[in-house]
Image 1: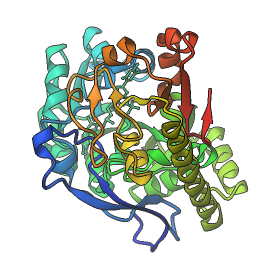
Image 2: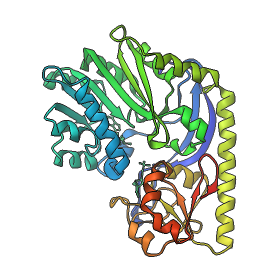
Image 3: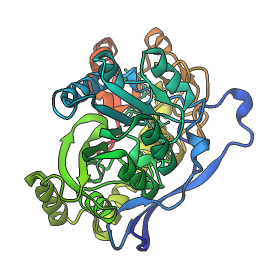
Image 4: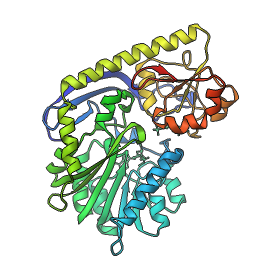
Amino acid sequence: MCGGGLTEFYDFGRQPLSDAFLKPDQLEGEFFFRLAVGVCDQCTMCQLMEEVPRDKMFNEDYPYFSSGSSVMRKHFELTATNFLETELTGDDPFILDIGSNDGIMLKTIADAGVRHLGVEPSRSVAEVASAKGVRVRNEFFEESSAIDIVREDGQADVVFSANTICHIPYLDSVFRGLDALLKPNGIFVFEDPYLGDIVDRTSFDQIYDEHYYFFTARSVRAMARSFGFDLVDVERFPVHGGEVRYTVARQGARTPSAAVAEMIAEEDAKGLSTLETLRGFGDKVSKIRTDLVALLEKLRAEGKTVVAYGATAKSATVANFCDLGPELVSFVTDTTPAKQNRLTPGSHIPVRSPEAFTDSPPDYALLFAWNHAEEIMAKEKAFREAGGKWILYVPEVHIV
Ligand code: SAM
Ligand code: TMP
């Protein structure tokens, strides 16, 4: 974003589109790219080395429906309620959600009768939001769409975005759009996986085609400032394996909270974005691959059954990087109908419904959706009670 130089620190090799679940007749011509991460020597931003064209990832077949998790539904209900009680109390307030998906956050706003708009390029999920009474534009957010929105709806009090800003390589266009779109005292609030948590937990599976940036408070502040904005607040959340919610306002409009300086000081003290730290992270990632493959091969030799739980986008990196296939993991169970009876991208492991899991429980379940561990383990108590075991690979390979 700043024009500085990138130094690559880890290469995951050839990887598919993480959310392109295949029908058996779609195996030919599968798209692959080189998944590698680097860090900017000037602004410390971490990012992918190669960009995948956006239409390949976000289109009418996009299969990630945010409302599939009860914990996330609660998280976004609280987020919306909080906005309704704080920023949206003036005369005819207006809130925008970039990457509104199936309306998980805006549903609460729509129910409260407050003016809102979701911007969502993937028609599969946008249609679900519309059916819930959420107002959606089915397009990518960028400068030109922001200008159209201002013309039609006026400026916004809040622009919110969860798990989407890190998906957008062209953030310069996004910030120019925000400049047109936000009221003078309006705020841009976005939350994404935090590099600090990724490094602390060695959660390398947060790295895949859609996750283009891995933010820190330092890199976000640098980016905001270069577009006439400032980082005025940060807040940590445990969701999705550890996220930070960043609040950005026009420079001088709001006083930065103490939390901003504290988080940046903490990042600097542990050398979060230094090549030494990031290469050390890479060494741990390599060890996880060795350990996970060894464990799965041992279990196969012992005749144990292993299936995976949660056909997450993250798991594309794990399966392809560790070269897992149906011989090591017989199927992946997932609640999403759009993923069921398809094959996982690149690794071609069949995806089955939750009934396939409960009808014939395996000896071991590899928890691909480890970020939903609490919710899933509570739901699958019977599996554990009957002697089933969970395999986790974050922060290291272990069995519970
Ligand atoms: N906000 C939801 C949440 O937190 O669960 C959805 C997150 S989902 C991982 C990312 C969403 O961003 C997808 O629905 C995708 O279609 C959308 N997206 C990708 N690029 C976008 C862009 N430039 N503008 C708006 N939405 C975008
Ligand atoms: P995520 O980690 O990107 O949120 O994706 C979670 C995936 O796991 C998604 O495909 C839905 C699936 N899932 C289940 O199959 N069962 C569950 O109980 C939960 C919470 C998610």
